[in-house]
Length: 139
Image (cartoon, rainbow, N blue to C red):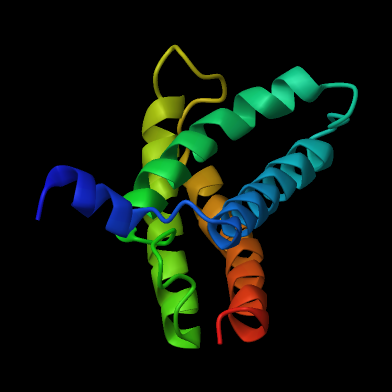
């Protein structure tokens, strides 16, 4: 198997994959926007801040989800896969995001409490989305 073949089996370029990516990113963006709002920032007025908070999660998620096959031809797969793999990928994506936030490139810094909240709230939103997709188009 060539590298090109391996890449294509990991990421399927289809309308179904586009829907999965859009929903995943919407769930992550919703998590970030809710968090910013609860900290007194208006996600519409302070969009630059929200985008700055969203960016490390976006990078972490796309790296981990792509490598784990969440956008492969057989995604979203079974209900168990939609739940377990999504949660495991989100935990890894949060770790990447926290690592990025610990650098001077991204604002916010890394904090254990924020990582826990990120795993719980973001994980819930992503899992609900992925389970819903699995129940509707995954069969």
